[in-house]
Image (tube, rainbow, N blue to C red; front, side, top):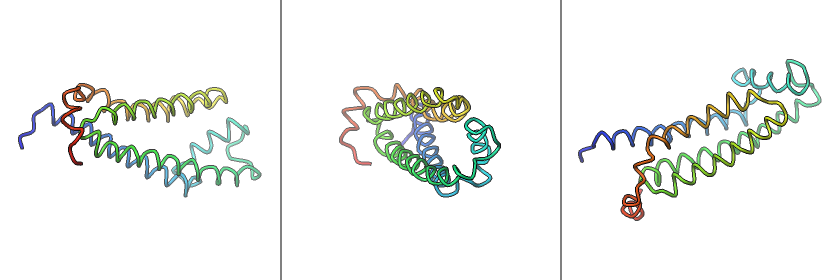
Length: 161
């Protein structure tokens, strides 16, 4: 099969979305299991400084931090594993619902997460972590937008993964 430049571009962004989703899923697992290691120290320090005006969590809150990182990291792993599957199969098949599901679900996350962070003054979460995550997902959506035509929708709806 001869691949056009347009199709090569689409496949590049589809793979970007797939592999970056796997990276974020693995990061979620690491956060859940090892949230207090050196990789997350700057994040922990940021939260401690915002909420306790200290460079580390108080001992009374440290056990809660350890606990709460598990469901948070597990949720991250779940969402990004799901996104990887969507990117790998229906997105690759140019099914519009897959693109739209990514846009809607991550918009809901971004609005809730960023809104709560702004309310509590956790600004670095918004302008570093959320902005980075949104950009990583927005780039493939933007650069593949025209590949999801109505014509492609009907032809790819019934294709196998």
